[in-house]
Length: 340
Image 1 (cartoon, helix red, strand yellow):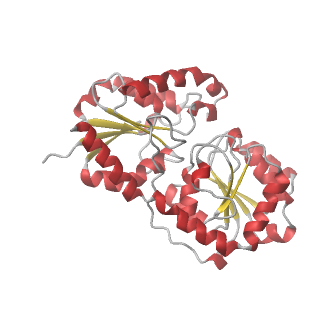
Image 2 (image 1 turned 180 degrees about the vertical axis):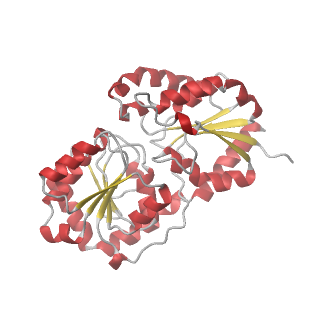
Image 3 (image 1 turned 180 degrees about the horizontal axis):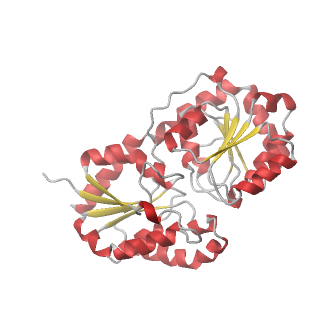
């Protein structure tokens, strides 16, 4: 029996991708490739990160020129709305995974990204109408079921007594409120900061602003900017830390949270998107309102440290729902059923 030919849209090769979309697809790959004939439709390297030109727009243009090639696939899986919009005009069936953020360009490093809201609304309406299969990594919507972030890695859970430090993982953009995390860190007791440095992992338009804030708060010896790190190395780094700290104004369910739980790292985060599905107050971490009090956030960090083993064990237990093998198995079943 011939395998189903599945094309997967992803602007970067899965081993090079950073952020939510790349690891999502990479973690599914070993299981999808086992049962399906998988081909990745990615940007050529020379088209990555063109100055003053968003990658989403580059990818959109690239796919327009590749439009006829979609015929050779039995189905195309996409986690990128601009790609799914183009595919919606093809006769090839589309399986689309919606972001938790309805307008991905609102987090763009380009100032004009926020003005793309109406365009992405148009994309979304057509995708909802035309896609054969639909899922969301954010809150469930009518007729659009939730798909969990798949986690697959070989990073070992580290002994609790050897862990130290706090970490933020994600794009260094305003919507992530990393400046607030740095300010909260500065409010912690000196002995806590002495034992636990703060790591900022990622890149983005706020890089220089955040480094200046660290200088202003006299934290240059305590705050570490790691820059961009490939996914497996990033999870290894996270596994040595005591806590993941998030403060976003808008999210779906970040891969960083799922990955942190998978190595037993408690999470403190704002209650946005679908994060409350997995982070439970006083169990595997804490959730705070988007407009949180920084003093209360700092108190939650101290609370977790005082009973760390409890929160760490619960964090690891709550990661079971993210096993990539199970997520892929359900997705493959849906694809086979839809095509039959």
